[in-house]
Length: 173
Image (cartoon, rainbow, N blue to C red; front, side, top):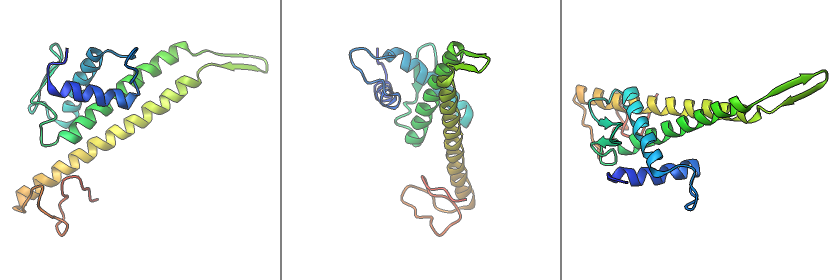
């Protein structure tokens, strides 16, 4: 049920990210992944203030315009994939916490919560990466807005190395 071009490409990329590549018995259906990607896109748009840029319909699982055709396509789709991975890891962490047991009786100690601890570390790392990528995206866009406001030339072919404004894909602190 892949209706939009982005769905096939991002589903494949997401399967690679979470290592769900067994064609005979994948852990998630394409429809589940598409739903997750659409919800993640909605959250990313909210985090970036792009709610007026994209029309995201969670009931129909659509994103318009196609995120692969946007000027910021690579950054935006990477944020969607990272946010989706974070949501999966958070769900796995919650499931493992519910299954974990810790028993202490005298000197004996049994703890089955090591998976929960590993998932917690993964969730924390993914959240750090997500926040870093959000900040990079916002700093790049701020630099471009400032360059336009100052009258400096901006564009993919412009070399701004001598200026104080970042070039797309380059951050200066």
